[in-house]
Length: 200
Image 1: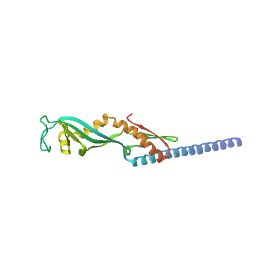
Image 2: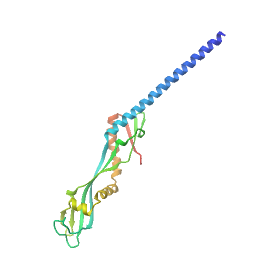
Image 3: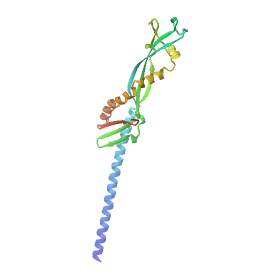
Image 4: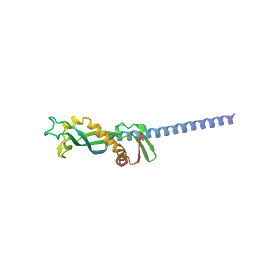
């Protein structure tokens, strides 16, 4: 009877020890998970503060041959065939909006942080009216002001965007994201960063 009681006490003690160890392990694991989440949340917050980040600016010369009419917008009379060569200058920017990053876009592995970003987008387009010119058939150069460009080329903003994409602006923006953002993030968090794009 005495031996049986001792065995029961030992068994009960063992069960209690296992329960305590299990709970302790669980607490430690939960703590690790919470620390990991807090770390990711901190990364998320700091990166989001960077906001809409400009990666590249393209300066474009769009050249087109066209016919325009002699009208009140012109300060002189065009040659009889009304043919001109228009050289329209503009700028197109590509950006990445880091405010849109989510917690699931961040993965950590020891000393490396993997960041999965949205594709860069065109964020600003500008027609440089004061620098744009057109040439008549006699090769005389003339200012091509805003009213004339808006009248004869009303979709110039979209034309410049399409031209920038054709010339590889968005691909270059991805390269610049890695060249520019990785050193910034590495300095901020003192960890290695790997950038990937979701659409790639």
